[in-house]
Image (cartoon, rainbow, N blue to C red; front, side, top):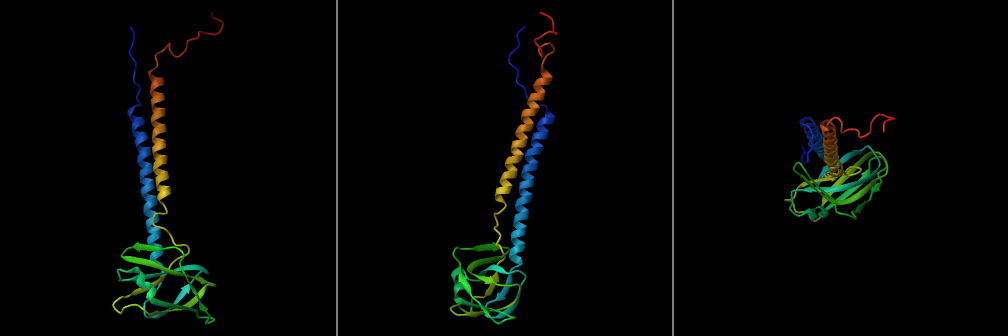
Length: 203
């Protein structure tokens, strides 16, 4: 009696394992994104700040290039250019010059919004006095000048890793499904169909 074509599907256990692979990739991606966002928030929270119209002594643990951001209650981010920023080494009294940013840098995190104004090259670890003076800034505009980290993290820096984990989970799920189909196909093969040759020496 001829049999029609048989559709081979993996057993329920293989479906469950494939689903688990896909879910594991998705969960790992979510954790990576959340970790990246937490790192981003901590970096911004850790910025050194001086209120506009005042002075303060900041401690820089490492030399290098730092970014200056304005955190103002103004809808116009360009208002930060109305603040004069003077930086001097407490130890030597030497003034440290700032430079205009060559690219736009901004951030938004937990109610804080920063607009990049420029950069400063801190020559050595130590204490520096920062004085901020209103030049073209209305008295109604208040806020701080923040010194960004080295380097400035990006909020979406972990997106490629997250997408990679999702793709890896899907690939693993597909491989498991294929293996399940093959195992199922082998299990359904009838005795006698597995070999077409008799014992060695027989015609």
